[in-house]
Image (cartoon, rainbow, N blue to C red; front, top):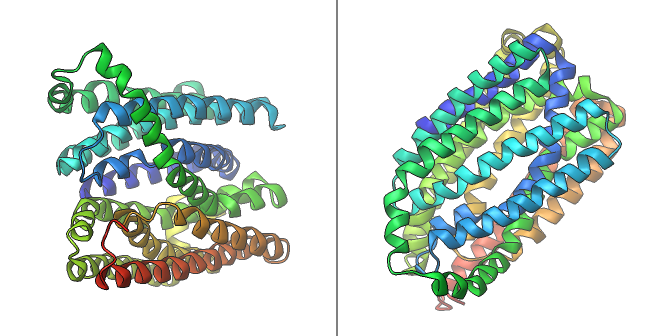
Length: 410
């Protein structure tokens, strides 16, 4: 998982490098704006089905139940993204890029639900292989599309085509046997009988979908404020810095996702000592990674930005350090988020993130007009630390209740 996510993260960073070198900060900003708009919508539509499937220790739902729900919500998300793109007052080229990125994220959503099945079988090697294929082929597809058409839209189309091929030819193929085993003995009546179960699954995932949307909003609030007040070029510079912080997010996510089924089993068997030990290791790992990133940014941040993206992106080394500090807080929130899922605390996650998004929006609106990109970085950092404190407090309460005999189901 770590290898697969690292390759994928490096290739996603490579996309920004290609866009920066061939198009400059404005093109990077337009791409970042499309990601910022589509990510919360697709996050909500996911209902975190992958995580629920991987942590499902009861075997109540089949893969087809998760897939049907994800397919329906993804189609609805595409309609919502289309409405935002063409009714949001954006220029025609920007609107088309937003829609194209929405289609690309739909391809990602289809692969994602197959990852849940693979994780549940603890076949993380298959997930990693898919990530590496999507990363390398996606970067190649975007570079080829950008080169042939000399437009961002052409590059995004090449990215989407590559991801579609990975889903069709790899993800579906390697899971075919497991999906066939679940369908043995099922008929038309069984399919119809499962519709209420699928509706119940979607309802159960609704709080997690709201939480995923708010999580994406929390990441992208600084981008909205920057685009509105400073323009697409400034957004491109900030997005390049933020993406280097999000590389660590992918690494921490990969390790935590691998541990998620085990966290769920520890809690279901009331082994809170093992749960605390594993969660503690994940937290220490995330914070250590963030601390190393802050030191690198402070020591060679300006040179690193200039080397990767160009001189235009390296004019605010102090902002880069602040962005990496936000990344450190982000890496600590990830294990706690998955831990809350493992202990079945679904409904509180939206409340936690409402607080974080509110803090993020208020601080960015107050700081960006006076401090520019540095203000956006500090607003993001403050919001993440508020999320970290609330999540840690709720996790401690839940584990204490389990130790005192409330049991994992209460």
